[in-house]
Length: 158
Length: 121
Image (cartoon, rainbow over all chains, first blue to last red; front, side):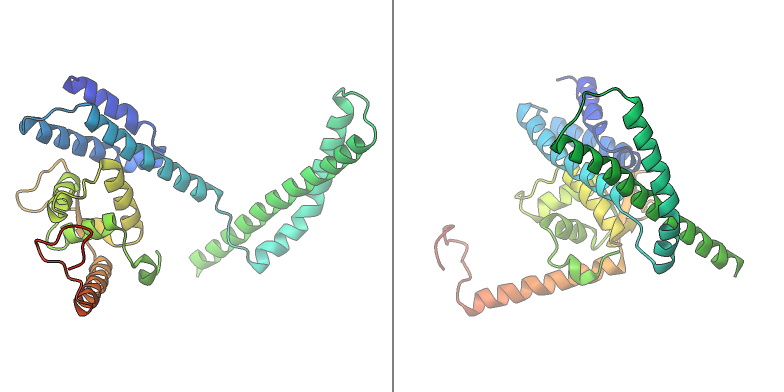
């Protein structure tokens, strides 16, 4: 494999990393890869199939790990506080009613086959449960963000 | 930042990176080569393992970006150095190794250079 082809292939591997990881380490990793390849070639070796298998296995495992870490980071909910939950409890009822109304309107407006028996129960359950879950999540996130923002402003003023 | 006791025992990769940085600042490829030398060519750390470990160690405060290049260092590269927290983790881990070696010696299990693998001393 030519040097430019090896560089292109490694760049392609790097592109599979999450953006934040690539921004932080991408250039360094490219440099380290080039150093390693130069060293192998200087010692009379070649970047053969064995080299690429080891590279792909090692990078593959780390790519999966870094995507997992990025997902966990994104999914992290704010720590619950008394004030945050109190604000969320105030926000929940109007949000729930609004989402329920939107869901009901959608269910009436969208044509669907006639339902009977268990299907009606499941449909009604989903019509209530989905807006309830959504309203709980959104009011919790909004409540926590509002309280955190107020606390930050108070700290800055003090 | 996690509690230092949570980091012990260190993974082989983290231990060898700290060992490589114990005496001087180094860039990625130097660390990779030093790990290979220190382990008698048994640990061949790939780029993914190296930078995955570096990311975690930076977050845990075990190492930091050295900022300035050491004398004679390559301007294009980023150098890393061990922090006091990293030194403490390395010392704790080395003590653990020494205690393990002591226990092996006390049980008279220390292999000699001629002992084949899998045989008792």
